[in-house]
Amino acid sequence: MKLDPRLQAIAEYVRKGERVADIGTDHGYIPIYLVENAISPKIFATDVNPGPLDNARRIVEAQGMAKSIELKLGNGLGPIIGENVDKVIIAGMGGLLIRDILIEGERFISDVNPRLVLQPMVAQPELRKWLKENSYRVISERIAKDRKKFYEIMLVERGDSSCENLAYDEIGIKMLEEKDPLLMDFVNHKIAKYEKILENIKQNAAESESMNKKTFEIIDRIERLKEVLKAI
Ligand SMILES: C[S@@+](CC[C@H](N)C(=O)[O-])C[C@H]1O[C@@H](n2cnc3c(N)ncnc32)[C@H](O)[C@@H]1O
Image (tube, protein in one colour):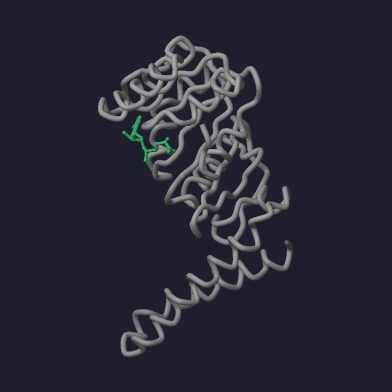
């Protein structure tokens, strides 16, 4: 199976021999890729909705992988309680939903201590901030790009974080430290987005009184992103 750049970047955080849980597996592509390439001997693929899980089951059975990929229905980390895994993947969901899954699964995470591969589609800064404030450490972070869209993928473990995030938590320091090849492109994309917002605000200058605070914040965001650019 050929994965798209986002799923490929997620799969690359799994090391050979690791037992994996893929929470919210949907199509089941990551588990299938990990078994097909003899990376994982055992995967728990879960989903809260029966429809996606049935789709995954059809593909898994067609590929003859039912022994290696165990499909489980249920919310968050619930279906894997009692199982032993090295890595938990939670990808393709909003950052706040990922946060809630981690909060509800706190007991499992403390007991089993897996590393987590998190790929929030939105609310990435909120998730980054929450992780830092709740005894999770981002040990690696990378960017994937597919058809002009950027995706942020974090490898996380339990532990205090001494790392600051950058630019209102929009940039993970590990992206900079690990010299992610897409970082410059990613930061420029963010700057362009904020400059566009600023332009729109200026065009509605009549509302400028109430817009002032927001305008200053956006200008500050742009400045901080430009600082990141200088450090790349
Ligand atoms: C957009 S898909 C992402 C699929 C795959 N992980 C990916 O990254 O391509 C999100 C999947 O998460 C499932 N999901 C949503 N909330 C969930 C939860 N609380 N627990 C488990 N699965 C959940 C949905 O049913 C859906 O199949």
